Image (cartoon, rainbow, N blue to C red; front, side, top):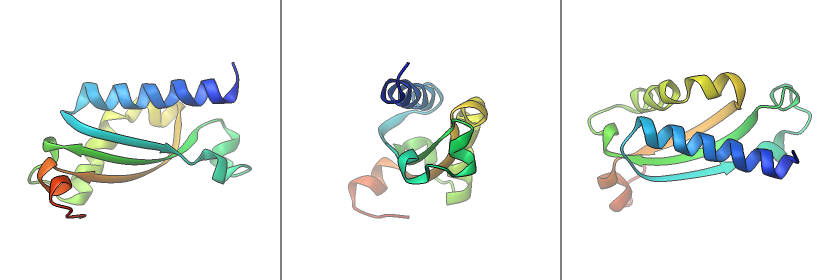
Length: 101
């Protein structure tokens, strides 16, 4: 399997896992692995990603709690597919009014 196909499959697994675990309104996932070529995490085949996720499951949660919710959902993939994940997590209200917390 070529790298582009593997990354597409990996990103699909990440999105599907998040959709299964959370009530998501939006998932924007960017693969930044190419920026980390040669880095220890890249050498083991896992990727570096930026995630912007919108879900009302984050309502009333602090930033750390939102991140913990995402990491719990992706737990298995953190062992096999993800080396680093930069998370931005908003509720639909926050995403709609331009507030970035």
